[in-house]
Amino acid sequence: ARRSSGANHRVAAIGAQLAALAAQLVAEHEREVSSLRDVITQLGDKMGMDLASLNSTIAESSDRQDTRRRNQSAPLQREVRPRGTSTASRSSVPGGDEGRRLLELLFRLQDEAQASGGRVVMLWGNHELMCMQSDLRYVSPTELQQAYGGVPQFRAAWAPHGDIGGELRRRGQVVALVGDVVYSHAGLLIDILDEFAPGAHGEAAVEMLNAKARTILQAEGPALQRPNMMLMDRGPFWTRSLGMSPEAVACPLLDPVLERLGARRMVVGHTPQRFGDISARCDGRLLVADTFMSQAYTHNAAASAHNAAAVEFHGGSSAKAAAVYPLRDAFEQCSALTEATPPRANQDDSMQAPVARQLSLVSAAPAGGSA
Image 1: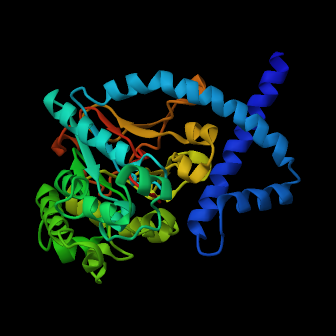
Image 2: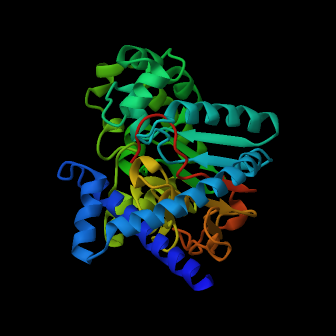
């Protein structure tokens, strides 16, 4: 029985990795690939896998993971509230059916954290932007009808004064600087800082950038689709220059931003990581933490549970960080990430603001679609 259980576990793990890889291929080639199932089938054919048997085993594992996740959901919510900082840097609108409820949960957690002396930081991502632009490509039909009542109601809810769009514009930001860590959904490049926060450094630059972004987002629907450097391919909603470029290209783009903001690390989502593991780049100065936790992409509860992840910092700086995978087996739930090497040789830890305890919920998942 133990041998059978171990074999089932290994097969389920392979299935989770296969689903995560397929989801990554869909995200990278969404124009060429019609559906996640097509990709899984193609991969299965190439690997000679019996997908029917595999899916059966994954389904059994999914039931166990669903129970495990329900049992752990309450303590996870309570852990967000103490006197630390939690930053959601993954799009909260991932293409599933629970987007509105997840956004409302984040709104509530933000209020509860503030009342308890903590902080929850919400970052806008490309999918929140798409919803504000009335671009519904990643909004599921079920979510559209059941949570909003149809397209007109959805657009009204996401308008600048709507109950979702208004709250998100008020509560969110495009970049956060917490201690010596910069958070951005997709990444922040120096030309964006030069354009929208000219001459500013540190927290002043972040505040200026967020103020400019909030002003831009006051436009509504199609008006928000007009060309704007903040919202285009190199902007903090969409860029993959840091997450996908070779490090010889990415690190020289990263370091001027860290120096300008007085930061040691940057944490980003948006660029999916193979097999659901958080990646460290540029000697640990960049953490890429989109792990494909949403079932809107994996189409599988076991794969999403495997991919659930957070970046956690303790102590007075972000030099040491851990990747936390709360729904994996005990020996896989926490792993040290590469210790960050400062972007400047003379970086002085004593001059950095304390990080205290940060928990970055990099793959949270609320209102309509997410990459």
